[in-house]
Image (tube, rainbow, N blue to C red; front, side, top):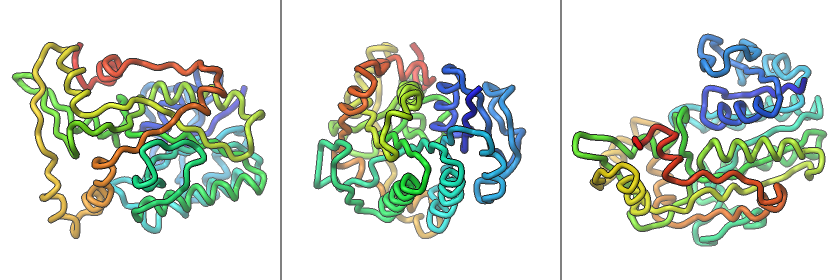
Length: 310
């Protein structure tokens, strides 16, 4: 049986891609510092106790695997001096074994001034420190693809999903006694790009099934939804019959606290993403999968994620 090592199985991308791969017959192996943290839905998976920060642990976990799903995401935006060494371990191991790395890309690497439409040929021009780190990560993966590994990058917008701790949607939509509140971090009529993780994970698993036909370094954009907060509010009202009240995100408070909190500093730095459109074109993925991408409606995605009630 084919084995996929999932790094970050407790997170949104790692967990959902693991589920999609399991449905396609892959045996799932997880590298976890604490095996007790294995999500209940993966009971029966092979668990290797270890740390992504240890190359010896990564080697041990990756032995015999044909695929490495890289869903490692340091908590609270503590990226500096962390994300590149973590990725380095996985890149080196994949080079040694000729393994394929599946990596979740994002829009941090783009300059909004180049938009609003971006495809896989769009220039990589980050405008933030985290965008620069993301560019370095992708450059390292490209190098890995030249040294014997294979790489599939799935570039997505902000996640919508259950079991996705970093999802903005799960934090800004709240049910209350009278209906719902929607705390908006940017203009409510500005289009934003969202990715429903179960759909993105299914597409990822289908691309993995064709990996031998792909270039050693392949990037695919998952188009997802283009929806403003006004669109989201209308969807919630149509599904639930409840009113949605808009609130403002407390940017001023976060800015004051940035010297004391790395997560707040990261959120403030990336605020620009809520003020400019960055739309992902999914034509390349559609063509590769012959148009067979599952597309759940935004309404169903919000219900299935547990964000709203039907």
